[in-house]
Length: 150
Ligand SMILES: [Zn+2]
Image (cartoon, rainbow, N blue to C red; front, side, top):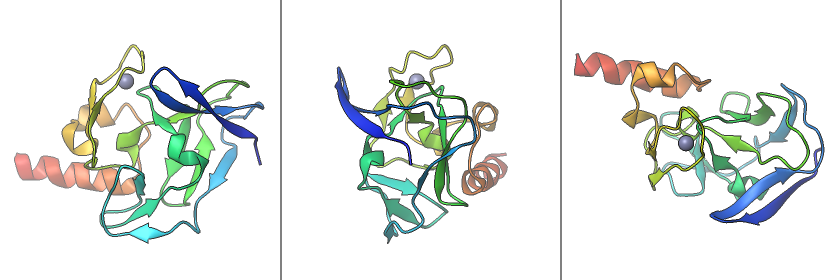
């Protein structure tokens, strides 16, 4: 298991790795986490009706529009999308798991393609979602949503 630490940044806590993490490497297994039927600011959505409570270090896994880890809601694990160097912050793309977020916020990740207001996948177009790796439940809801609108 990798050594992960939290660090106080200008806008809250960050989750930092102290060792190199290679692309596709398993970082965390959350298969035993408690499940809820509603979302809160500290849950991760795993399907249309269920959310898991994240009360470990991964509570500090922040959003980025240019993420370096993926929260996989099928295998219930977190793995690296790219090689991640020591002292880098781990980030994931919240709309990859969240359809509608309990607490939307303005993103200041600094990525060239920053989406601004992050409110969950429901607020994004299929075109925007297509640029990211997203989970099957989000893809399914996005397709259902767009067919209802047209
Ligand atoms: Zn952003």
